[in-house]
Image 1 (cartoon, rainbow, N blue to C red):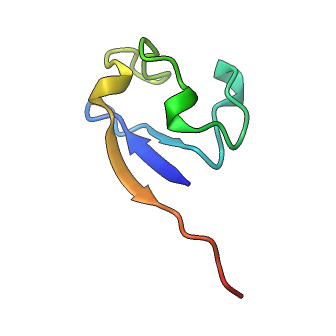
Image 2: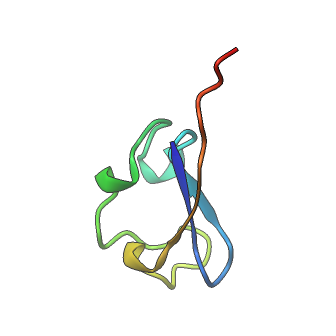
Length: 61
């Protein structure tokens, strides 16, 4: 799963956690988030402005 960061306030959307208060349960992929979605913390940036910050890899143990 991936994570995406707001370049203004550093809020991070983590696909593994989702944003239940915004209606996106854990496991909601970034592609499933509407393009007109704004950062829930600062409300300034559109989804297109978020920057990918990492991909969590499944553990093999």
